[in-house]
Image (cartoon, rainbow, N blue to C red; front, side):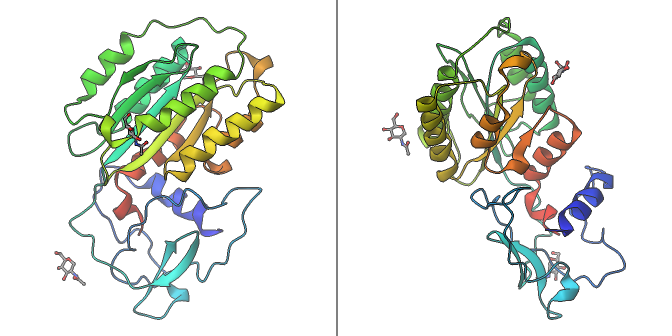
Length: 274
Ligand SMILES: *[C@@H]1O[C@H](CO)[C@@H](O)[C@H](O)[C@H]1NC(C)=O
Ligand SMILES: *[C@@H]1O[C@H](CO)[C@@H](O)[C@H](O)[C@H]1NC(C)=O
Ligand SMILES: *[C@@H]1O[C@H](CO)[C@@H](O)[C@H](O)[C@H]1NC(C)=O
């Protein structure tokens, strides 16, 4: 676990345009090759409160010379490296469900701008959180950044108001369908869902429905991340944001550079597993 801040710090100083660098760590013995790519381990209990790891290694130096220290399952293990010199891009199917406030729409546009929306790379799906949740965009190979931006611009922003939790739960239930292959999701793509919400207060029985809806998403292999929106301070329920996300490391207070960088890294996942 201790290596992650270091990996992240190094990743942040690496220009994103650099393709497939294998030599960012200097000084320590590095085993040649790449870690076998693994989809984000969405069911691992990795986070501040939950970490319970059995790490076999922290650096390649901890392994036999031919092996690399790689993330496998939920832990770091010594494994045989593979050669990813050609393959640096993975398709990402990125769904976003959101309360359609002006600031949220602005931030969704920032996410879209950061990603490489194209036939081969990232596809976007959009669904609103409101009483009548609307599927505004399905995953589709014909998307371009401008087309997606125009759809976001065409959404009429709502005024923040006091809400109950039910529209959020329904939107999460419907989000699972958004990732159905009949709705354009690619089998080979990484599935990521961003939920923009202030969490919202609810009754006890609704908490169970929220838990069930979130669980269903995570169990179907979707990496779920929740992003707080600070519109109505008095309705914020951060524990609901934690409940929704795949892990507490995927609960964010705003769309900052860290969120954008980790989303971008998913697009280049094989090369990021150095
Ligand atoms: C990895 O790919 C590079 C470039 O294609 C090649 O030169 C190298 O021999 C490969 N290494 C292995 C172990 O296959
Ligand atoms: C993004 O959201 C923050 C609040 O989290 C807000 O202050 C900011 O204006 C938003 N950005 C855009 C471009 O709308
Ligand atoms: C996908 O959607 C179809 C039609 O809406 C439905 O019959 C099917 O059960 C869904 N599959 C999954 C895996 O949810």
